[in-house]
Structures are given as C-alpha cells and as structure tokens.
Image 1: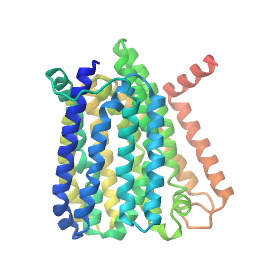
Image 2: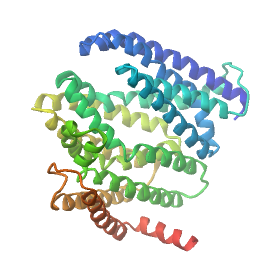
Image 3: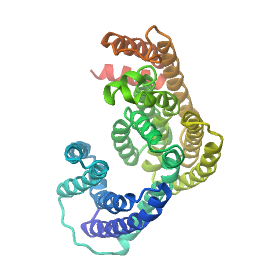
Length: 409
C-alpha cells in the first residue's frame, strides 16, 4: 500500500475520530438524564477521547497485521494495557473514583495510538484522495457493522443499570468481565492470525475449509474448556479476585457460562467475513441481529422478576443470535456450516458434561465453602480429564492437528 493511500486513510480516520468524540460529548446530557446521574455529562466528555484515539490507531494497527507482524502487535497491546492499568490504579489510589475506570480506557487507546504510530516506518502527509476513499468505504462497512452492534452487545447492561439499580449492575458487570476473561485475548490473537492467513491463501475452497475447521477446533477446544471451568469454580474465582462480599456475582456468572460456551464459534464465524472481505454480509447480519435484540430485550425486561431471570433469558437470546450469525457467515463465505456446528456441539456438550459432573462432587463450588487449594486442583484435574477425553475422541479435526504436530516434532 502506497504512502499516499495510507496518509489519506489516516486523515479520514482522524475525521471519524473527531466525529465520534462530538457524538459522545453531545450524548452526555441524554445519557445522564436516562440514568438520572448528572456526573455522566462530564464522564462522557472525557470518555469520548477513547474511541477518538482508537480511530487514529486503527490504520497503523491494520498495517502491522497485514504484514503479519503479530509479535509487534502483541507487544503494543500488552504494553498499553499494563501502562494504562497502572495509571488507573494510581488515579483510584488518589481517590479518583469512577475516573479511574474512565482514565484506564482513555490511556489505553492513547498509548495504543502512540505505540502503533511509532511502529510505522513510512511518513504521513495528511491528504484526501479517491484512492484512499475507496479503501476507506470498504473498511467503513466493518466499522459501521461494529457500531450497529452497540445495542446488541450493551443493551443488557443498559437495562440492568436502569431498572435493577447500580448495585445489581455492579454484580452483572463483574460477571460479564469474568465470562469474557477466558476468551478475550485468545480470540484477539487467533483472529489476527487466522484472518491474515485466510486472506493470504491462494488455495481451493476445500483446502481453505479444512484449514478453517482445524483452526475452529483448536480455538473451540481451549475456549469452551476454559469457559466451562468457570461453572464449578465460580465461587472460588469470585472470592479470589473480588472477595466474599461479591458472592452474587458467582450466581450470575454460572448462568452466563452456558451462553458463553458458544462465543468462541461466533468469533470464528467473523474470521471468514474478515478474511474473505465480506464486510457487506457482516453488516447485514449485524443489522438483523441488533433489531431482533432491541425487541427481545424489551420482552425480556418485562417478564424478568429479578436479574437472575434476566440473565437466563438473555443467555437464550445470545445463543440464538450466535447460531444465526454462524449460519449467515457460512452462506456468505461458502464454508461448511455443518462442520462448524459439529465442532461447536462437541465442545459445548463436553464442557457442560464435565462441568455438571464436577459440580456434583463433594465440596463443590456450587455450595459456598472455604477455598481449598486441593479442591481447586481436583476440580481442574477431573474437569480437564473428562473434557479432553470427550473432545479429542470426537473431534477429528483436533485429533488430526495434534497428530500432525507430533509428526513435525
């Protein structure tokens, strides 16, 4: 890609970043009125800087990924997380309260922007041209697709905060964070590698499909395994990370885990959209899913007696939307939907089976008890053994991959 085109894309991203900041700042009074919390006006003024900085970092990050410089991408992401977290802790220690959370997001995207720019080896001359505009429009479909997903992804938190209160929102938010813990960074790394590989492939559809299913099997195996382990160890994990005053988080987390089991495969479905350049197809399914979510969430809110009912019904909705996304991705990108479903069903069934069996063991985490290292290690060992045996026995793609690795060694 020429420096002229890169400079044009950077300039367009700057315009988008400024636009997003203006929207965030202008929406402050509306959001503050919705939650009846005046402080949110000032929070939105500062928080809007996070997506603005992220917009500036996007092009430089994309160039590194395009060049398969994944190690450098990882170092930038890791460094930004560490520095921003340390600064956020400092703000909290100084009595900053909510500003610690706000500052973490702003600092994270600020340092990503700086570090990714320093990795760029060319020169930037800000200008706009048609060559860059055509690329920007294509990438803009992906960006628009992500913005469309906003209500689909965050409607649950909005409704819980509005109708169940700040305390329950705290439980709900922490449970969401713990559910995402096993997948976030693994999915991020896998997406960068697999998408770049699919985009660079000059092979037949069957060869691409074989590579894709092996990748799905590996990510699904580890993702579902780690996610399912959160069920029997929910109380221990919450107690270790947050303290015993957050017991309600464990109850919510155990419900969320079951919907979370399908999340690795939703991430895998997006690989094909990105790798095959099917941004339009991804935008279409996100619009449909978001519209369904808006209607479904209103219905869920009306029939939910408490947050536990809400999370249960929300989990059913998330699973349904995930299957819809996977099916649409297979239609748009021409890959084997039945193979993807088979891998997903095996991993999910193995995780549920192992989690329930371990959950019935004596001194299970489903009953609050003092944390015992031997109990935790026992749960992990028994769960891992059952889960691995089921998956490796039934997943041919995973088994073949392991055998190939052994032969290479």
